[in-house]
Image (cartoon, rainbow, N blue to C red; front, side, top):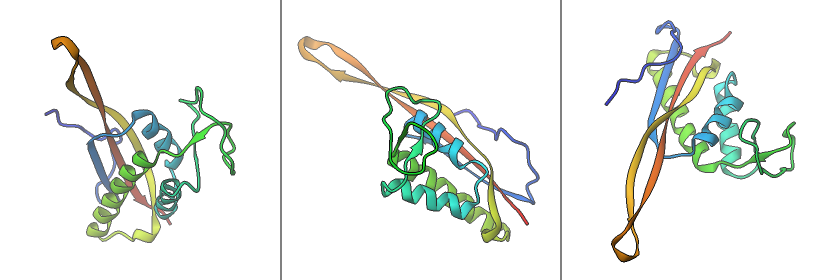
Length: 153
């Protein structure tokens, strides 16, 4: 397996980081969530993702917004969705980064997301048996998510 490096070089003593690899979630949903929570305080980002999972707040879809309907609420954008599965997986990665920061002795109340991004993972190739001895390909794409947290004052 290929070693995946972080996109941003940081000082290890001032930052905490975590990575989720080969997550079986939608890449488009992950891109929209990462764009929305980048730069947020960690506690606000985790609360935001919990509201998305509970269907209380929609994620505005700005890049992948074709045929995406309007959602009520304060979106400040015309299209949005509730990507629950992707929000849950990203929430797990944020919790891991928070625990890494806690292990390093950083103040977890003063953390913000310095960098979060999603990359295309490998494709899981499978085949579905069909009638008359044929088979149809069934591909499942995976996603890598990387998070870097830093303390702010």
